[in-house]
Image (cartoon, rainbow, N blue to C red; front, side, top):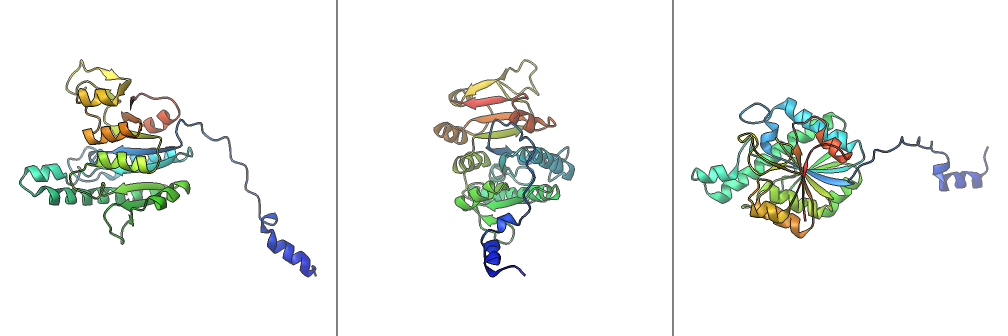
Length: 264
């Protein structure tokens, strides 16, 4: 029977009796440690004209998982335009504040759908809402959200900023700044920023790099003006890429791919 002193030593240093973890394989080399992915609600529609297209949601979730598996901490902000857009409701006669709040609720629905898809792939995830709805999402508390990221959970920020008259673009820039993200990745249907719509104009010119001031002066459709100004004030680069390009998100973080960088 072991001596009582030996038992005490074993209790005091349990690490000696625990199996040691196997060394990890060589980590992926990435350009960023923590990023925010901003996508529109329309990106979740697929070929449908409204709502959610489950295969498309799962495909985007796979893109996020591939980056998460590289060791990158990922935040997300998803728009709500596939369900309800506040500006459209306001244009049809609805009171603007009410319409914007309805749009915020649409973003929560999209966030929950993405959470379900990510968890189905084995990625731990938290939906964090700027409007309290404790039964389905956590309230936004910055320090708690940062802790989730440190624990390698994907954080999906929903309900915009919680205030009307602000878009999810502005919410994405705000949350990225608060979370100390190193860049915002704006997933679109084209592979960067163009001087005009490349779908409608064959002579559209793509930029590899563009400044915040150029985006504002030339009215380039990257994000709304308040989001661009906030990113400029915080020196937060915006990387615009095609979300329809399989593996595009991961390839950019690996130093490859086609994209446009908006920076100072």
